[in-house]
Image (cartoon, rainbow, N blue to C red):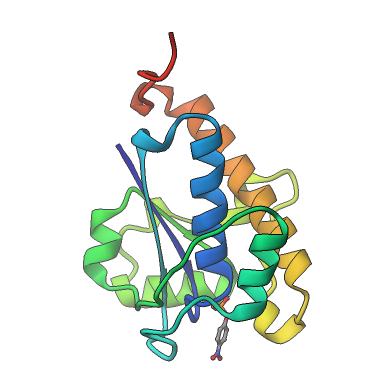
Length: 161
Ligand code: 4NP
């Protein structure tokens, strides 16, 4: 089992989007039983709130359904996950602040796995939800390829014949 936590600031836009996109991706490939996927915000500002409606609409336009309730990342969540995938440099600093610099070996920017390492720009400010979706999808695809290439021994292939 590979425990993956996607992390942004508020946990109402980018990280729940990434959680649902990645969950959909592994489901399509029959790999769901190998992963436990969740998402968190570094701030408590949006705690208890649902996915931001424009994000939900963007996901539905891409055929992805699902709900999420915002929650703040705790040190325990960092300890309990194998990969902490943050959306941008600010999230990375916030996670390092939470851990006091520990566990840095499992914290990555989501798009650092792509050929074009970059931040997932925050659509809360850019209002460009399609761009956020494209970045999240690219990052999730590249992360899954990394896992299949580097951590194949952790994958359950009991769905294959
Ligand atoms: P997220 O976006 O970090 O992608 O969930 C934001 C959501 C809310 C706020 C900022 C970013 N806010 O300032 O309330």
